[in-house]
Length: 183
Image 1 (tube, one colour):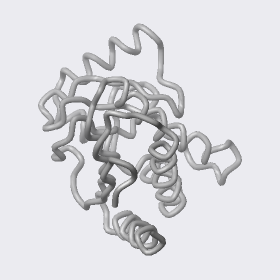
Image 2 (cartoon, one colour):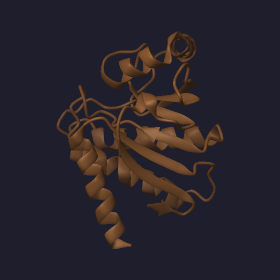
Image 3 (tube, one colour):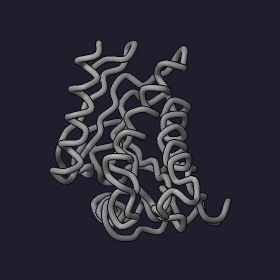
Image 4 (cartoon, one colour):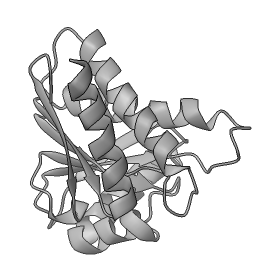
C-alpha cells in the first residue's frame, strides 16, 4: 500500500537478510546485544556494530525506552542499524503503548535525518518483552501511517515490516488487507 510517496509492505523473514538502507533493531537499553532479534543483528553484523554501540553508551549512557540511536550495518546487507528500546509489557500499567509508539516515531525521524530511503522494522517488544502481538502490530502500523500523513517531506520511500514468525505476519497481512479495503 502507498501513503503519499511511500510504499508500505510486510514480509515474512529474517531482518538480518533484508536489503534496506536501515533496519530497526529491538535493542535493550545497554545496546550491547542480547537475545532474539538484537542478538541476531549483532551476530550477523559483526563487531563493528558493537564497537559503535559502546561509543554511544560511553557518550550518552544507556538508551532510554522509546529512544533510538544509529550505527553502521557492519556485515549486514543494510547500510545502517537503528537501535530502539521497546517497552517491557506490564499489562499497560507503565504507558507501554505510548513508549512503543515513540520507538517507531523516533526511528522514522532518525532515518529521515540521515536522508535514508528505505527502513525495515522488526516486531519491537513482541518477543521476550511480552508485548501482545496484535496490539503491538496495530501501534506500529498506526504510528508509521501517522508519521507519513503528518510529515510534509521525508526521504523515506519504503517501509517494510519484517515478521519472523507466522503469527506476526498474519497480523500485518490482515491489517494491510483491512486498510486497502477502506481506501
